[in-house]
Image 1 (cartoon, helix red, strand yellow):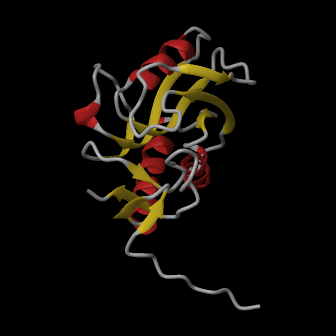
Image 2 (cartoon, helix red, strand yellow):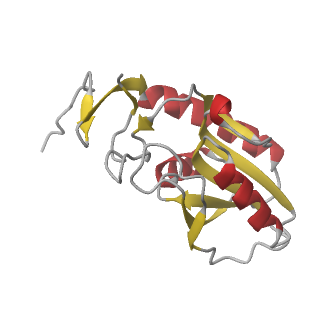
Length: 187
């Protein structure tokens, strides 16, 4: 059976809101390849553990992991700060903790998006409690103008304006994660 090629839509409707294309899968893949090369250089000779933040970071983490040439391990945790809203509630709740022991390990927190910075600050503090050998961050999207607190982010694929985005793991009330490209809310 021959695969069917589907062209990228000019817009998508999710939960009665219209979104238009913003970042293509090719642009995302190219940038992830660059970030993976930086991680390869920085952690050469080490075996880091990539800690993905569910649900949004799973696609980014998978692509980043495949782009690395160094050995690595993976684990996940889950936080909530959005619910079904388009903006962060400002309250971070841990829904699933790590299974791995990260004491003395080189840890890379993998997050889909940093906007207010509250979730990342929560994660960085929490991970430091486990005494990793090193702690780095890999972020797909950073809304720098929305970040309320000073943060050190090691690997950022894209800095974006304060836009509401979906696709490539990012959702709107749990819908839209499956889109291969990233879309922004029209308006």
